[in-house]
Length: 201
Ligand code: ADE
Image (cartoon, rainbow, N blue to C red; front, side, top):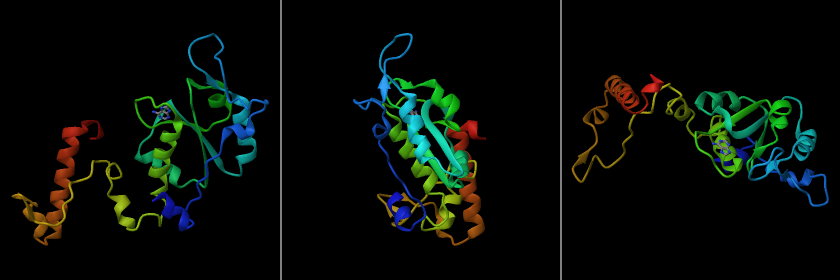
């Protein structure tokens, strides 16, 4: 999908190596934490220099971090309307706090778990955002009825065959009665959401 979006000219994705903006001969991008403790902390200088060259008019800079605002469909919709995003992928124990305090517009977490690296989080974010850009998905309607876009989990879907091992497709979906089908889908979406994600209701 990301490839198709780029081929259609609807998105340009570029990965850059922070080391290109490292300031010392060893091209270091991380150092030991002040105050001690395990691991390494990503340095501010390479990030500031990178942003200096990559930032343009209207750029929004995001830091991928487990400390960020938890990503959801509404944020994906908001960010899909932006013209230029830079995602900073944290690594090691974290990123010098001054990056978050002074250089970024938003901090984003993709969920309550810790990855070894923000790059996977950036890919998840990118996939969710780019598919919402008009024209990227084949069927424009398909994004509108996704789980969460409606505020609920999506209803179940079925395709041929009608009967597999005695497991039948719900009769109403074969009825051709569009009002009844809509009502059934809404009911199932509500039931599923109440069962699995009552926090969404
Ligand atoms: N980096 C490590 N864990 C992360 C998470 N859950 N979300 C965003 N970036 C991360």
